[in-house]
Length: 419
Length: 145
Image (tube, rainbow over all chains, first blue to last red; front, side, top):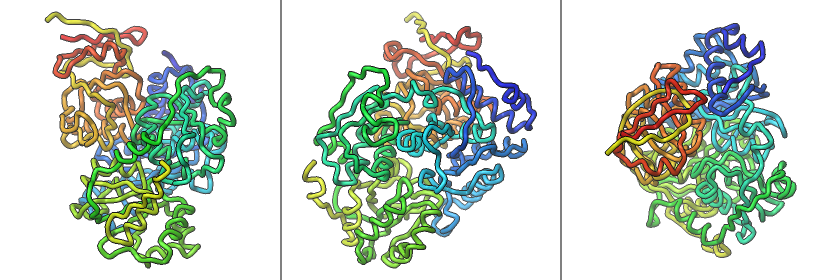
């Protein structure tokens, strides 16, 4: 497979913009070959996941770019890192690792990326528009961009994200092209009650396990489905599976109708999600039994301003029990907005600890070995046991809040009674 | 037992021989693989606790987080990584980890794609050889020794 490059692209490959950009271009071209592309295409923005520290190799790579005098050529946002620069005292990890993690963050800012430090770049004021091509990494952001915004990104990972930002190019393949964005599986959820928010992350967790490489067209979601609900669904599915795009018929922009979502394909694959599937998926998300709790973690992906508002409402002026540590992860921009609305002060007074720039499941923030953690996030529930070695209980936001106030697990059966 | 050849398509070029480690489910390396030890740590994964170091990992697909490329590159740096991958589908995120490790450290971790019918005939512990250095049209040979 050969890729035809424009004169400009070839010049980048040949080193006209320095050795760092040449390295980046080489990666874009090699990925293009892997994807079967015959040319590259320009992008209008990028979101970088490579700024999260996984070891020396991340620094070694970014230093090739920094020392090669590269910089980004399109507006580029940064994903969560390993450190909370606003609340640095929360980091319990190895100090040396912290220093290296900070060096990695600094290197990406030096390349010209915006220090947004959020896994929910779609909650920033500037976000890609319908039909715009971008290079986004971070699995939940990829799903959201493709599905909810109708922007176009392939499922990019670490390294290629910054390589695309530096070169301004991606392979013209995969989810950038119409033909690869059509639904190939119909998922009927009409049987499910959708008035509980917690149905969405659970449905996402279930879908990730069953859709494989299909792009599902979900039918049966109400027109009132919110962006926060779609975010939770996508994040759950991109954790338990490798979903990069879904259509919600009548809701998401490329699916005004089922026919539009499927394009010219005749789709006969069909799954009907039953209440039983949902209950089973919900129970899969919990590893702990019993009612003792030590930690409650909300905000994976980073809470939106609306979600913080819902937490304020659910707490209704009550305090978190003294035996519980409650964390809420969010972006610094959203935290700023919450501050302006007086919500930060209210929640901190109740005992909530805000976490910005990072997340509680990717870096040591939670006190280890103190007991079970509870979350309203399918993604957190999926990853935390492996990453942190904690036992986890999944619950709806209201269950998390009632548990936080009571100091032990509180279930609200009515929330799930229709399921 | 005589050797068998399986047709495969090259994703990342290279030649390597090693014992197969067959994964019953896709593995997200981020959150699922400890780069320090090479052990699978995803508690929900059927092969949790097994070590990928030096193995040719056979798995249908990649899964989950886009940080998987970083974890693979870091495992290559630390010498805990698999030496190759046989997959049933192209996974760009796994491929990138391999490409970047080659770019930084010069270590080649070949990746090939085979049909699930063929991959299902490979058993953990089988000695497998990937030879794709002189491939034409992206075709190569996967040999079970």
